[in-house]
Length: 180
Image 1 (cartoon, helix red, strand yellow):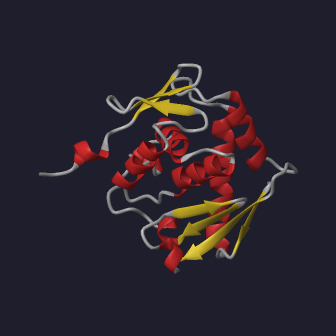
Image 2 (tube, rainbow, N blue to C red):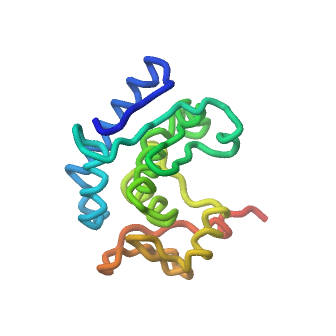
């Protein structure tokens, strides 16, 4: 693979490689109900396929300070995977690694936060680790004028479409989920 896992235990490295295979399979057989622009899909396939560039380093970040409040972070061609991403979540009993790694790979492929959140939620279920946007994400969407690299969002309905006008997903407004 063009992805190089490092600093993981043998078991966690095997998990990462298995997750990457699942992501590659999903990219090769995308869900019909959630279209993805072909250039994004091709870039993601290049990232997860053998012998392609760029080479992306996926690094175990443990519980270091960079992981406080995060599941993973990416910069350039490096993804820092935090320990909690590999551990079961209290609500689902499953780790979030599948959706989180997919989300970060969208950033590696030039995607903005809106792109990553939209495709994470369109292509993966809660049980697979997808989570709706947070209030912090909402602020990023606002700062980016509700536009990503491949998608845009109607701030009133939270419906996300690609630049061809195809519906990708309708996200949930985090301010509407706050308890009174």
